[in-house]
Image 1 (spheres, rainbow, N blue to C red):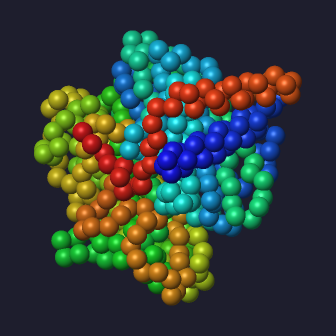
Image 2 (image 1 turned 45 degrees about the vertical axis):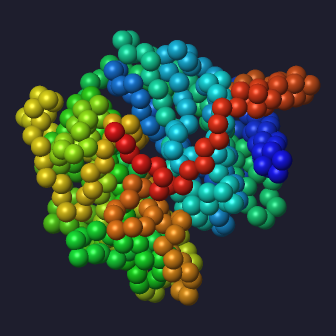
Length: 417
């Protein structure tokens, strides 16, 4: 009985949250959310252009916290208002690290709460990447549709949450080329380099300590690449340490260009054997050290990583692509079931105050163990009575069609074949 009461309480709270989100969607046609400028966060969803013939792609809602506190809750609601579900569908990924999700084809939400998955919430000035899967059923002709995402964030200072809504366009295009993407979590943990070269988390990152920028690169296109070039920029207050041989570091020690000329990445549907050395995805890392003079706690912002594919004659015949040896600072990622989005991502370096906890737990963007972990126009104005009926009806529909609740921590988001 106690479990049923908790479920009912959480369901009602979720319905109330969705009601609040839906209320914030009402705006004049063609306008952005009226309260956008008052929000203490921003978000974007890059990478919604998909090569024809790809049946699934994972994109990431990139959420940035502009406030001076870690939020108690982040909630976003996906509405495929101008999409044909028989051609393309947006769903939350099972085991994908989006928090507690609910709904169905006609609209769904994900809720990230501090008392359930605090490691999924962005630090002050920090970022979080929430995955969304796109399933493509149209494989013969180009297709275009639009969908809307609304989001809000609540803190602990009693400020009324502000709903921000944006429109995005999904395009399926006839372009059979490679399509690299990258996701780079915030740097939150200090690390030790073991004798075998693996990284071991050693607690929250403090002034004078060394952490690691980890970035996952995936080929979600239709053609292979024979190498990868990564361009990184660190926030002010951090420098690169012990760079790999493939990297050239700038004079300021905050910029680096890493050229992995033999790191071939095939399309995800060709990475079928987890035991060979043919890869569709890898996770790389670069060690970074925070200045000892940094006044903590603080979030150092402005870090970026951008990737591009390198090609040679081997990419002409995908089935005959030469196998490659991974560089020392890379871990192979089986990617048959994972497709990340975009070729550039931002990250922050979160520095804890001296004397803080030294555990290597949640919030580290990677987990423990000895291994490197996988870490438009809107609706017109509607009358008050009509809106209330639609909102309540829509929310009850979500509850009635409830399928499952998924609560996942980042370290559970595995890339599986």
